[in-house]
Picture 1: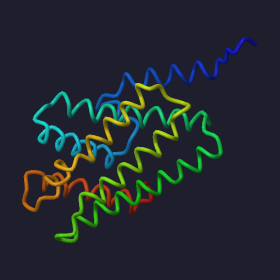
Picture 2 (picture 1 turned 30 degrees about the vertical axis):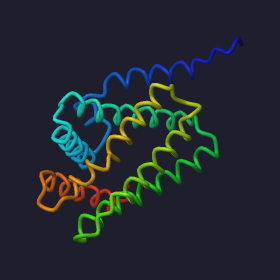
Picture 3 (picture 1 turned 120 degrees about the horizontal axis):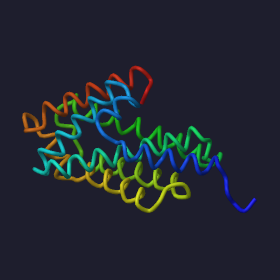
Length: 186
């Protein structure tokens, strides 16, 4: 054949269609309630931090689009053995990040913005390497947008300020992360 593959065409169509449907109702079809609640809290933090509803929606929508596209790639067995090993390392680093966020929340005066920023930067770099040959530069930009937004030192500092404006959001995020860790989903 001349390089045409219906399987590749179907996968590209799925990625495109699903990325256009990254609304809250569609998210609830693909992810569990706990993850949805965590995303809602990340949205609220972003909205309050930036003071910009549109920007907060864009960050969360970018996150959802990337997750959906990576799920489609996994479903279609598009990753090589080396990429699957990298995905496992990413999953371990994400777990470490969740545990660090929870620990900083539960143990007073242990917050270290540098540690969280470093973990998020490593996660971003691993994810970009994982999808390098599979997603477009636009998707790579989405990954950078999400990780750069949530690793912003000022945002993290405000998030972890005791009795600060984001304290209730952080509590809900950490409770959700704790639940996902206990259920073995993260």
